[in-house]
Image (cartoon, rainbow, N blue to C red; front, side):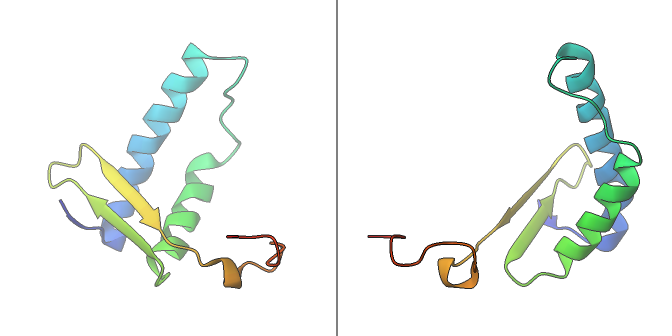
Length: 86
């Protein structure tokens, strides 16, 4: 595993496309691929890779990737902070 680079985005999107397609075929009542889903995901990955609170790792053999992140409650304006984390 290594840190993902912007040059990894095309194959990450392709891998995700194939997974979404298999979900849509297996569970048609729950999964429907969005129009322009690859374009939308490409933009999301590009934005995500610039976030300081996110990490993306890829397998050297291009068979998979993992994305994670950390959000602090104080940064979420919609959370009722008086009731959170008590």
